[in-house]
Image 1: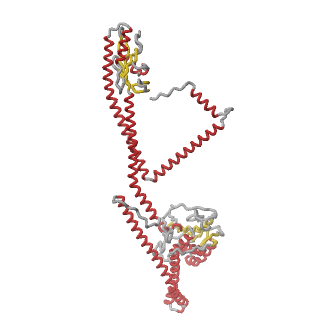
Image 2 (image 1 turned 90 degrees about the vertical axis):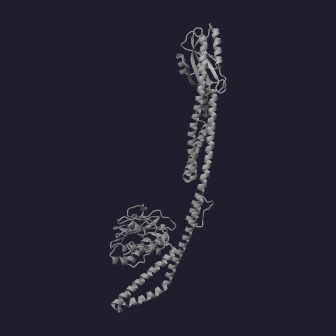
Image 3 (image 1 turned 60 degrees about the vertical axis):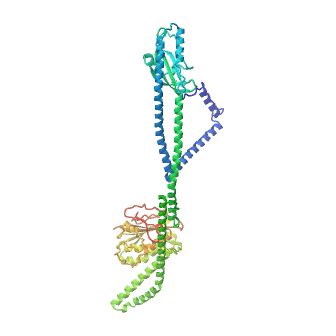
Length: 608
């Protein structure tokens, strides 16, 4: 137990007054020095808090991102808990064993000495005060022990209930008083005849140590000649034993800290030997994903990590070979399509000329030949359209498509596309309706490609509209313009909508194309949209129709963040020109596909 140092009277008040006087001016208000000091302390406190937050954030990030850091920290924490538990157990065992052993020794010695002196007092023939005083002094002096580990001292104290004191308190150690003995022990000795003991704290030992642990034994004796009751005590100074225990504790703590550091270093080295190859594998994987197919792991040794590296390198080599082979096959396929398409143009032109001659003279043929001439002419027209689409796709695949942007009016382009699809709409019995309040929406775009996108979307809606009206919604805002083509025909499932832009794909393979299309219209439309950094998205609901939304930035180089139209748009007659929103994915029965997600002309999106 540590006793606080005595403080002179009035020292706290004096110190406080001096501080207040230093921080105030003549009129009692805070001075400039005091304000500066407070600002400095506040700044330091703020900096300390900021540093603590930064440190905590850095440790948290390190904990999340580093397996090695987590392993080492967890190992050291668990080891620390184990050390504290084991160290506490060992400390208690050592302390208990040492105390029990010495207590038995002290108890035997004290009992023997006290009984001996008790008999001396009982059998003494002293008849006056001087003789009794010399007897007491000799007894107290004789009880002093010189054991270096636990020095023994003695004390004779009058019992408070006794009358006619002959001898005052006698001690063998200078400065010792009866007040330092436990009150319970004094009460037991005063009322009993046995030998009693109790631990206590010695304020100052003979060696000068303060607040040292001690062990006191006491019994009641009768002093001659009147057999006056007194309390005789012997007590042991256990400061040397406590010092030994403190040394043992310090050694245990030091050994624990050293062992903890050693275990931490071992854990760091072991985890590093495992994590380092994994980190290298992750870095190589990222490079492989970025297209650096020649990257490989360094393999050393023959252990599990080495086998993992060898297997990884073998896998990377196989992937490189397969990707290279697929790239070569893709290039060969693209070149084949391009070459065949170009080579077919000349004979197709000759066949078309012959088909036109036969078609123009079909009235002179018999009915069978007349029908054959008409079929030949239609199929040649379809073949020519397919060839043109194949050539366009080959240009996209080869990266030769060029955007020729100019200022165009989307409203006029929609009108032009509707005029081109009007004959088909009449034949199918569908009405084309513009739902918009816009009269002009000017954008920077390639007019020919935008017209082709709109024409493909309108024709596709007419083919699948089941003769119902087809709505064309137009809306724009300062950043983008959107056109949505909505039909109310057979509709699409989310899976079908996710494949709507695939090449040559049909939702129903048995469904005949009424216009003899090539099956590449929506794929080409997606490529045109991608060339404009635009969005081309599809939505469908079986039995409720489908909707294709085309969103185009008004200025080239601008990234789209929202669309002026919903998907699908509302069925009202008008749209607000200033409205802008992006549909949240996950609507039931809908699939959103955007042009910037397209690769190699094939939609690879998923239902959302």
